[in-house]
Length: 91
Image (cartoon, rainbow, N blue to C red; front, side, top):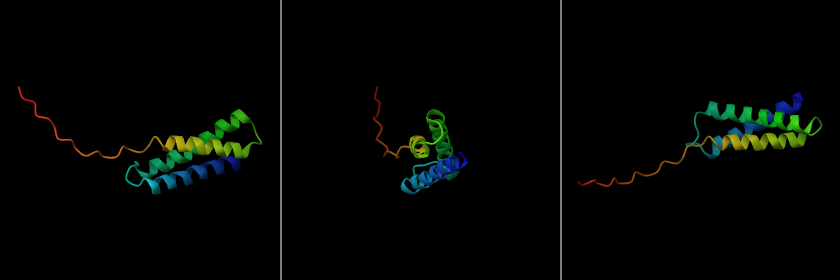
């Protein structure tokens, strides 16, 4: 269980690092992204381990990857849109 948890946390941190590298200007502070990656990996492995039971390490890591990716996908801010000219209101 310890190896599974460490593997899931490291996997979450690696996915967070990849997200920071691919979307450098759209993500919030690095600490939040790394924390989300680590916690997402641990939570995904916990849910998979609880539902599948022991002995399913590859599936637990797959679930950790999926949960981490889902949580990290919620972090990017939208790209800045160019300002539209405002219409004048005439009475």
